[in-house]
Image 1 (cartoon, helix red, strand yellow):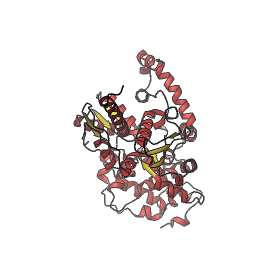
Image 2 (spheres, rainbow, N blue to C red):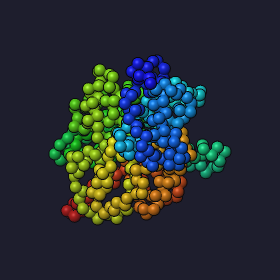
Image 3 (cartoon, rainbow, N blue to C red):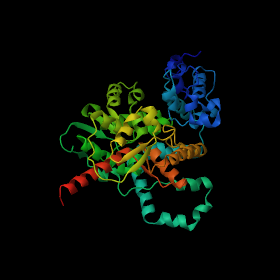
Image 4 (cartoon, one colour):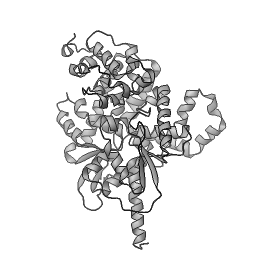
Length: 452
């Protein structure tokens, strides 16, 4: 058996060889992860299961298997939903194995083609390394949509000339909001009433580009709950996209950038409202464990990062004033990385249950992946669509009029699913529903006091 520490080399394989061997050795092959794995549930093939993927990674770490294209394709067929980690009795850190395996794949370049290299460079290496570029692209897309040109193109029939997959991708194009976060959220938002906490708020990438209103709602809810909110207008990507797609070096650089911008010692909490981002940011200590300059600050950072639902319930949610409002039937789809990565399960439901006139209906398979999984719905459309159809059928069975979810990728996937299945259901973040309830309470209080 190859000793991991002595086998490191300049080869891409060293991402797996450099992994603490106990991580890959920990799997007992008990199979309790199998029923929780979406890809295994569809294919019933061992290599498409967490157990099978861990075995492949261990074989490479042992030197018994070469890092091949087949292994690379298998690691990108995995959703990275981490449901297996919730099910595993041995506590196998599948997320660490998964990310190291993809890093090895990218360093070895076993999937490399000129087109793939270009797409990864333009997105991961360029677009998401400076969010000004992403928001500029978003502004152009917003102009395309709001000028009526997108509607004209769709009515013209030109899209029928495109391949079916391109037509599907076009239909998934998100609606870009009128303003991004920096135009709605001041750098410092004072607490309403007595200040109890000072927190930093991270606006995110896709969250800012597509769901900036959720960011505004999040800051409003935080201030109503005694928090002074620090939210600089120019922020960076958290590095989640990079780490999940094998670019650990870039992810490390972005982690350092976040720690420099938001020194953890200066805040009571560092707030994220996107499940995938929050899950990644709670593991900066692992990402920077070999960096003597940042390792200690990264440990402090991990302790301060809080999902918005988690933080609100930790500090005690300010009561929503009772008011007259239409009854809402809401079901909740759990973000994989919020439920399995962060283990934040109870708190989003508690936030929803605090809203007057809201009935929470449990969703069958609520913690089952919707198929978004970062960019999985783009790179693996067939499996993603099967999972989306399964999710939408469960949502339909609840007869809910609102689907709540706490992650930008899932929100976008569910909006696409509602359109695809022609379901008249609203898709919303729990914090948006809470912010709306607070505002209704304000109006009700103003009306009952006779103020004009």
